[in-house]
Length: 359
Image 1 (tube, rainbow, N blue to C red):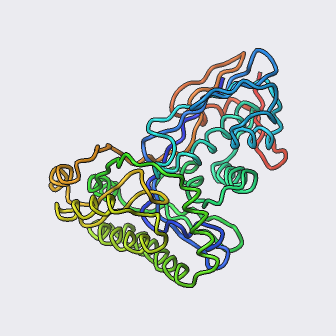
Image 2: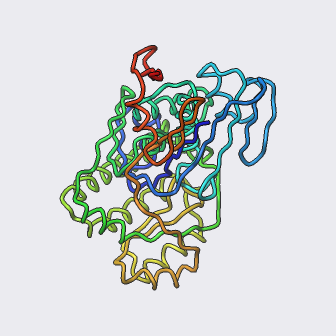
Image 3: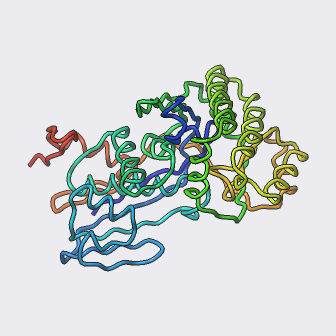
């Protein structure tokens, strides 16, 4: 039995520039952080040669090709697993349409679990890129790449997307005090609205390919990501709200479905109550709203928006194995992945690090 724990993410700046329609021409950049809300994936050997997949529904099929869940079917086929497994998943918060990257976190956690099931360790960057391959190329999703890297790598990062498809993850180097001030200045609410991010992103991708105006907006959003990175590196937390506000105003111009009158009302109410700036997380249209404000104004903001407040904290770790159990040994805990490594002989094959149990 394998259980993985994969964080969701909060995006701050540059969203949309991680779409191939933009970064392959101009390069893109985002600032985001993993958070302490998770997707859990459990992979277990099945008694027979069939496949059981349990998520919002349950599938019992005879082979991988019959699985209806597109990511599960693609991941099983990609790794050459034809049957004999049971896969279940649970999430800390609503797992679709909330703007926290849950679909990509599921893909990352699933692939990590399946690799561990095959006794293979995959480095975080490789895991992220493989997740992009499954979602974008095998499943045909017109989405970006930031969510997969946030989930696999963890932490607060500045991520660059190069025209040659390289992705460069740069941890934002700031003091613990700066991180604590940033974290304590953010207040996040659930709007109760959900939406399909892929449809908004597909439309945005088409606009980016044909509209100079959309390209110009995204260039300005990328510039804000660089500015935010630099300000945080200097410990200037007080400027974050203004950058978020500028980014939100730009983002609203990119696609009509990113906001709506109700979300705009929440945003203006929060600003009147003391928020410096904020944004709707993810592609837009619903999900979670986060605001930057002095902590002493948070109570007033909560009263003004009258939405459900969600307590979120930054997460330094990316996707990890928290339970690894085979016939000879069981490893539990937050760092089961790292604890696993010294107990194995390491060999290299097909681009992966192969783990063999040392008897």
